[in-house]
Image (cartoon, rainbow, N blue to C red):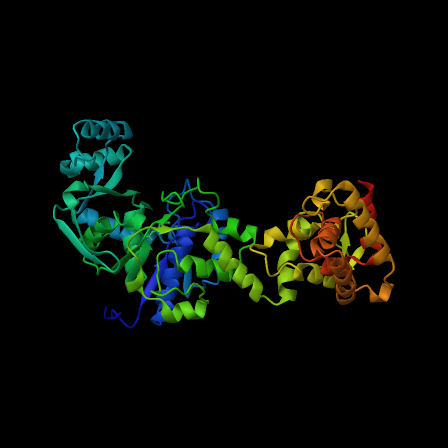
Length: 493
Ligand code: GLU
């Protein structure tokens, strides 16, 4: 397919409502807008849609900004807040009312609900009947003066609304099914479909890239644009994000907010890489993309129509890749909060840390060393404490049978542990390093004809775990004294 040509001054936006923490769907939309803007030398604008005063909370607005920054999706303009732009909407509402393209509707909630139920009962798609359309000006003024509750409705013209979606192609909707849409509670309280049209126009947005859940709003917004005689942006609706059960991703599917993934220790570069593949397909098997390569390779033509399944294994795989790319020092810094939070260590002073259980102080290099053993296999940062807690414990707990290699008997195990004790206590302190330990123990292990029967009990005695890094690396970091203590502890079983 020929590459589409886009106007020179591409202007796109992301327009989150601060009614919840930034979720994956919106973050993905932000990313696609960002990539589209960067690719076309355009501008990316952030607008906070906080007209729903009851549901909007400043903590959510703060979270949205924080997470977008963390992801590296910096905006060129904004954040604009709809709540600070009320007078702009009022002007256009007034215009529509004066031109009789909108009207006050006094129907009560109960009336509307009864109407809806009736329509459903006769098998009709519910929409407003238009009852208040024909109220006389006098009556409207009288009822407004009386303080009667009303909303402002747009007189939806009956026609076929047709638009070309950049992802989904031609879309046709019969507007008579929409009914007259409520566009504001009053002159100073616009509703979503109206405010969005005014803002996109006022901010010169020419491409609206958003989730497919908004596709039913698009014809409404187009009709409002037509009534106000303002230009129509181009639309691209991104496929829904689905859980592994192929249902729309929702709170039922574990974590949905960006902050949740961040807390679990997914890296921003991994989140970006992963989210790019939620609905965009480079057309190759390639799975690893930096932001720069995404900017180069992204194209809206390659956005798929079908739902994008959120595959956690893929996210883990991608995150593991970026963890392995990290310089070890940096990785250790990223892991540090998890150690503190799980109360293995605490910050001491002068860049030292106190191991809470043993009261020892260690330097940052101790963290670097221990984490280094696990960089290859780590999938998310939060896993680290569980993998290496045994370096931060006085005594470790494990099931005694775990010490046994295959069908080893109690007596065999006892002999092996005694042997280990003798060999290890014979190694000089300054020779107690990985290379020496490996040399000496491998020779011993080979004598038995089966390395596992010596090295497995050693590894378990040191780590208490079924799977861990190798025994020589662990022994070097623990040091001779602790290694012998742990062998003794194993013998006590
Ligand atoms: N405020 C809407 C939302 O949070 C987005 C509106 C739009 O992109 O047009 O879902």
